[in-house]
Amino acid sequence: MPEAATAAAERATIGDGEFDSEFDRDTALTRRAPGVYDIDLSAGWTIMGAVNGGYLLAVLGRALADALPHRDPFTISAHYLTASQPGPAVVRTDVVRTGRTLSTGQASLLQYDEAGNEIERIRVLASYGDLDSLPDDVRTTAKPPAFPPVDQCFGPEDSPTPVDGGSAIADRLMLKLDPSTLGWALGAPSGKGEMRAWFGLKDGRDPDPLSLLLAVDALPPTAFEIGLRGWVPTVELTVHIRCRPAPGPLRVSITTRNLAGGFLEEDAEVWDSTDRLVAQSRQLARARLG
Image 1 (spheres, rainbow, N blue to C red):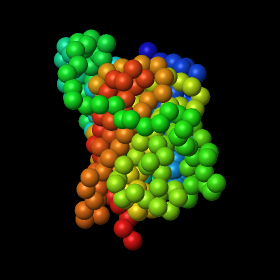
Image 2: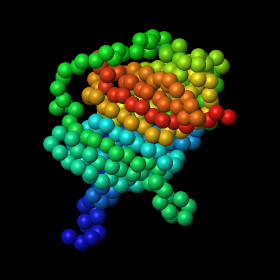
Image 3: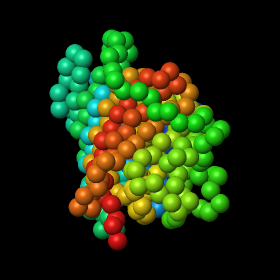
């Protein structure tokens, strides 16, 4: 087969059309060659001008689901090297190991500077499997977070003033925050480093393992409730997907226990509509103390 025909045959859209959702359209990639994908990062998932880390993780997660023989992320760890910008990007994947129940791969997302030089934005290492094959036994001391129903919580649209720096991602999310974690918005942060919210996609798309990668990084930073303001860039984020979520809104609970040396951790739990713990994460972020 001629080289041009081979390249044309290799190109395929990964993700778009699976659901009628902006999230799926904006995380869809074009397979250029085995393990190499092109994407135009959408400005619709930005906050303060930077592309949201959870959205970016979902992009890389979708590429790895195509590159690996297993479809579901079990654990994925990302190091955020430089801030991603809306526009063209390339994702390169490598298969590290394949097994009967788990396969492991790595991926990098790259963009280009004005001179055409590649800049690596994120590097990921992940293990994938089949969530539907897992046994259904649950032995846990974890309890779902208790906070008011959706109609008694508040979202960005309820704020009398716009978010500092702009937050396009807020227009794409159903995000309703627990009033007890909203002191920062009223000028009276609690100091507890907690954030809780109902979470979903505004167009009504039900959650799945890829959207859980977005959910763990979509709430306002816990640093706001500690009394800090401004961008809190992620340095490293690890997500564990525990089971396939049931349809309906998710509850997300995030806590920070320690801010030291200009860095803080955020521990997140995501619970589905059946009170099942479906995802956990920890991230290290830089806090602007000035």
